[in-house]
Length: 240
Image (cartoon, rainbow, N blue to C red):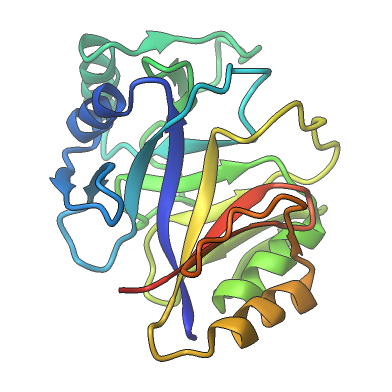
């Protein structure tokens, strides 16, 4: 596959601060980023990085995507929650019930994330970031499976999930109803096209699968902004 998931990007009001928060929560290290921004990556070379990009866009509504973090034990879950709170996170009420085992938090920029209880079978063996959990239709799950060449690991009741053949973080979509989009997404996927691949042919492939180019496309020769079938932004760049 000539196109791979390169990063999960956060548009952030304070990118450096948010990078420090997530580095501390996940135990990931800072890495060099292609545009001089802030990025962290997991210890193993096979995972994607997380990038933090400056943005002055105000937060409008709830994010369409959030991280689900895994726990090895109840004590581990408690330690992750405590660490997040010490680093500037906060508890968040999104209507969860007292008997639910996961803990809902917000990072210092207001982005939601969940610390999942130990023993969750769906997220077993996925790593610290068990899932990027998204609002989205069944069609968008099929779209991303085709784009990345990742198989569907869940497809039931219009809920879908994909995972790299190498394992690791799952990407999930909860099915309808999908909340209306109220502005640019603060979290979005960034893809990298192999340097020896046909750039235009790969962009044409993405469009043929259901992507659309932005009317005022961010296009600088080696990067373009597109939308998936649910209207979510994603970025495609040439791999260095």
